[in-house]
Length: 182
Image (cartoon, rainbow, N blue to C red; front, side, top):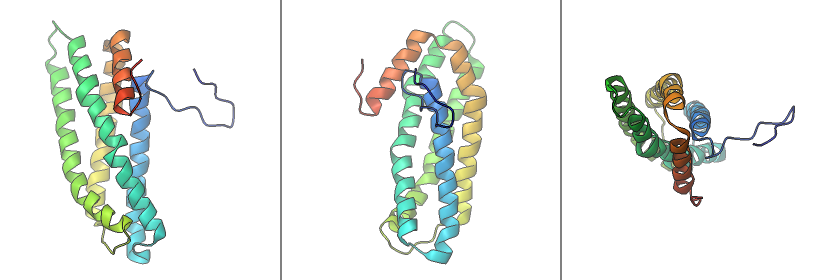
């Protein structure tokens, strides 16, 4: 376990604590959404200047890699482990939760596509408009999704998924991010 000294930031959780890593990722997603909203306000005044290009490239890179991995972590590893933890039980509410979160992932991907195209234009220094209503729809949908995962999914996973299954999820997350399974 990493040591955190007063006044210094705590070490980010790693794949050895996959639920904490997923929760930390929610914070990073929220920060990227805030950057996206600031960029939408910046563009009408400053256009696709260097600051806008940097912000657009950063947001694109994050949602194309880390956020995509986050959804894969959940859909390919966490959700199946959670369902498996309920084997033999009546898991209707759990299936509803997982199916709803997968549907939200698809909805978020649909909201992301037009934003990605616009952000690519901005990152390349070309003039582009980032419609505030598109940004708002995306950021609000992500905020609601994060709340649902933080309030329902992660506490349930912590309670129900056995330690060996969590370790396997952590290893899959590590491999997905370019590390090697232990």
